[in-house]
Length: 301
Image (cartoon, rainbow, N blue to C red; front, side):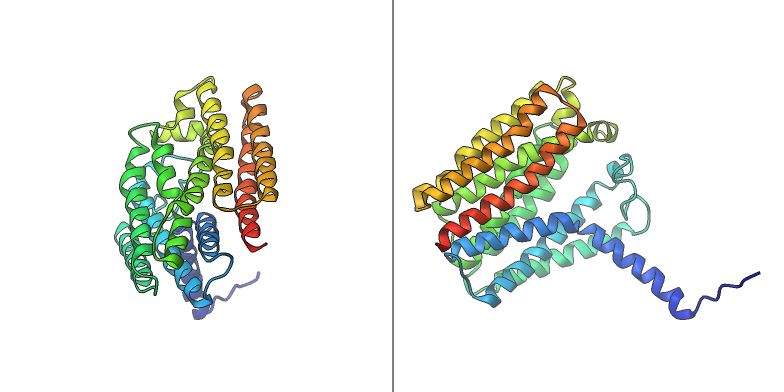
């Protein structure tokens, strides 16, 4: 018969590691990474391919903290609906591993710290104002809209399209029409991206009482129209940079990427299965960084 000896260090370390993992889960690292990548690309595009290194660090740190705060407060407000969904029931709040008070404090502190950093940027308060608007729209408009209207995806696409403008404002100190294509590309891209997710998990969303378009669209026709229509608009928006000097190589690449992204949606129109929805989702994750990097490379050439 063997005896397992647990040291004091192991007893104190294991719970701490678990709590740290829960706090990491609160900030949704995958979403945070995507936000930071689009913020960085927005900053580099604003700087014509370059920007002061420390300014970029502060922009990304401030944006990352505000993003962490928004995700945390979102999970705080949705803890009851999360408990009713299979894909979210094990999150720190619905599972009871973290309490509402400590999560609220963490969310507010990270948000305020992030806004303070962005306010201190040499370019002025513009980046902090955009980040503050992003936080407010995400937490106070999009989050409650998910329980009230199927239009929530379009409402949420507004704050979801603002991160590159945080980067742009952090470098330029202001926003102008040249930043418009970044907003529209992110806005239109989100509709097919999140419609694919909502189709895959439509039963989960319905069970939680969240009003997603696929949940009220049993045939999938309206979902398909929304996905294809916004992808066509996305393709058009991706050509707007031509007005500001983007070259023909970018134009060819943007059209090719748009058509590549559209292809699985045409398949989805014929076969509205979870498999084809996952194909749309995978292509969406490929399309966005590729088109933004292509635009950045065009600026560098």
